[in-house]
Every structure is written in structure tokens, then in C-alpha cells.
Image 1 (cartoon, rainbow, N blue to C red):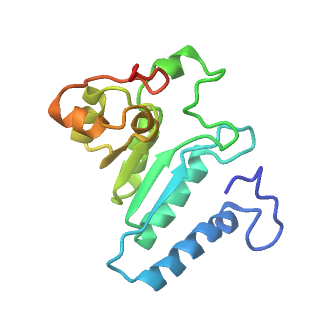
Image 2 (tube, rainbow, N blue to C red):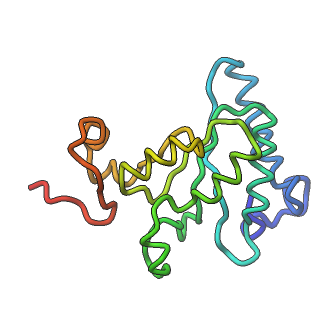
Length: 174
């Protein structure tokens, strides 16, 4: 949906409504194929963090459209495949230190839609996950990278044996 990568000049490019048409049409077709009872979710960027790219405002409009269509779950992340927002690289120290990178975005999104929201990116402590859930900002926590490094993470969280974990510094398992 980024105007940087979508340079089409037909009904699928240009304006945000044209660029969003692609994801909305895919959702509608999936829904028609699987029926109303089958859950459908999407992962969408809060922004792609590129000058002239997919902005937070555009993303908010797309999630509003998806919520109005009845999608069952929206997962929020950010960045691009070339430069994901959650990879350390040359980011500011304050960004690296902050947990739940897109929490401010999801707080705004929650005000727009009632669709269940899943937040991915930056969670490193159980207390921050619990607080975000308790405060009602999101409905699910995404932990893709930590699960790669801590394959028993869910059990460790639930049994209380882990309170904090690092996604870039795995434990010595050998």
C-alpha cells in the first residue's frame, strides 16, 4: 500500500483509496470463500518509516476500512521487509530501549475500531505485556522473534520462570 512501491496509475494505484482497494478486495474474496464464521486477520504496518511512504495517517484509514468491513483481527507492526522497524541497526538508542514499539499507534487505532488488535514488535518483559493487555489497548501480544530464541517462552511466562527476555541476545542453551 506504500506509494513508494505501488507506482501503478490504474485503479490499484495512486490515491490511498485505490491502493487500499487491493487489500479490501482480497479480504472480501476470502470472506466469500470461507464464510462468516471463519476468522480472517491481517498484518499491517503502522507506517513504513520511509519519506513519501505509507504513513501512520494512511494506515489508520486502512484499518478503519478493514474494521468497517468486519475483519476479525488486525496485527500491527511496522517498517519494510528491507528495513523492519524492529531490527536494531542504526536506530536511536531511545527506540531500542523502548518496549512495544507501536503501542502509541495502537492506542490511537483502538479509538477508531472495535476489531481485535494484536501488537508485534519490541515486547521484552511480561509486565509490559500484561499492562498493555490490562489497559485494553490491545487484545493479543505478538512475540515472533522471542519464540525463535526461547522456544518454551509461553510456558515460561505462564509458570513465572521468566519475567524479561532479550530478542537479540539469546540464552546459552548448550
